[in-house]
Image (cartoon, rainbow, N blue to C red; front, side, top):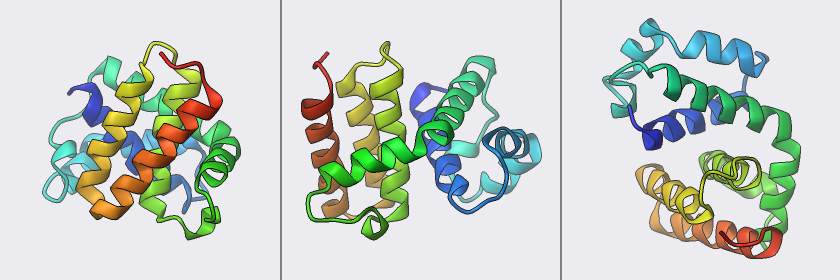
Length: 150
């Protein structure tokens, strides 16, 4: 399993955090399992194989980090989504942006451009082209406004 697949799984779990009473740790324990992957594999290619130790660590770091910093990440999304309230942003798009923003803010080993590019590639699988451009624009504005470009 490669990192882009791990990001996509983290996005799914980040999305699911919005609808569950489980903690990030409990959700990860339940979802990164053979039976869960077997159930989802026919529908989603990314569940074709269980993550290895380094991919599992990456997924866990992202999901736990997003859970811990969710409010902050959502505030950034709303700040850069000019004229949009966070509640109006498609939930999948929000989950995709949270993953990328968390990587940009808290994982300095990940180049900003890579985080944005991966977010856009994931978005292309789940959203229409207008939403993909919206995500790209917000993430680009976020990097320009909040970070020193890598």
